[in-house]
Length: 502
Ligand code: BES
Ligand code: ZN
Ligand code: ZN
Image 1: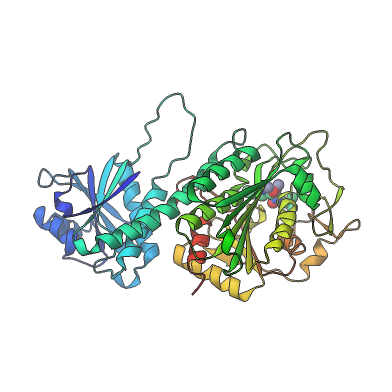
Image 2: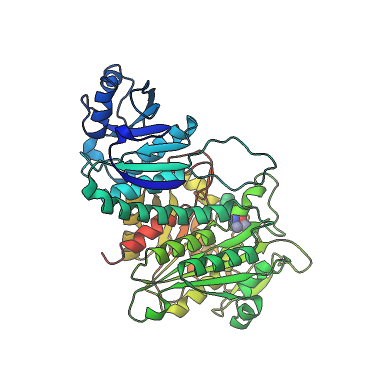
């Protein structure tokens, strides 16, 4: 979707649909909505009176301009209660309006920003919210079809601003919104791409192209280098696949590592998870192509960090492997010694995410980080606990927790704190190694024991773990999250990094 910002009057704008807005309880709309109402001889006022246009957050009303405006159709979107309005509500309203315009098969849409007028929102923030939400809502997953399908989507969005003084502010905000949304879309595309294409090598190549484009430092570790580092727990997962493992290292502000805070982001990159010899059942296995969502997110976040040129030293680490079965594959009962020197026993080859993270988190320690945050589609148990309402947050660091929860609040990408009681350590005691990778067949506290396993490999730095298994593939569409690959966590962590200094 192309984005354009225009100074002028939305009344005079040509588009398949023009979008204006309404706060709940308003009976005589002002601003652009009032002007449209005037031009249409009070049609919006009448719709309000009849109860067909409520102003409730995200409610949309579509009607015809019958030749009185250049645009044949007008869409009014509700902004909810003016006193409760914020950036999240602006994004929800924008997304709902775009969804309705898409459904009406509009190709070109013109809109005002939501909430910058009587909403009192900062124009930069309002433009960011509008562009970010519109792009995310208009997203379509890549598909290979031999015939064009007629799924409607919007080709051009024009933001119309009445006050010319606001133009530079809108440009700035729109640019931020576009960077963030397109970075999430970069991650969504990787997660949606089938694993016969999106192999570890393919993702490493995409990361390389992206890094060159946005000016990030990149280095790819091959199997030999990982062997030399003693990453045998990570490599155990890769043994069963013909696809060589890759370990992508991205860095923003590498040259200023000494003077800037260092944040390391780690993402689980299992390009396909069959479960290995602890084989998954057929039902739903196809979706395990998104088991690299954590890695995809890390690449997307680094892209945004580079384009926004944040004043931080940010490192992205993505261990990339395919969890398969062959004559060399790891087996339950195997014991491996990883980079930290600690050993682990394989109980389930399907608990592979925590294995690749064990060595990636060990490697993270090399940067002497101020914080390490990993994202992983780690457990089915997090879905049982939380459904698709929030990702699981595991940390014992108060400061980091506060930062993450604040960013969750701002972006609406919710996190819910989960416990990491010391007693869970007992659950993963092994008779043959320092720790075991699963409590199977005992399923008690499956999500907390996975975090406890990761914690075993953390050496001396503030760390938080996000289990995004429940949030990475949208089952029931929500505003900004059409069905499918979600890249949940990109907006959240970009926000946390943007606010780091505060
Ligand atoms: N990739 C899965 C977790 C997952 C499940 C992600 C559903 C997205 C949707 C992970 O590798 C896994 O298989 N975890 C096991 C762990 C168990 C064997 C301890 C699980 O959750 O069943
Ligand atoms: Zn698994
Ligand atoms: Zn997995």
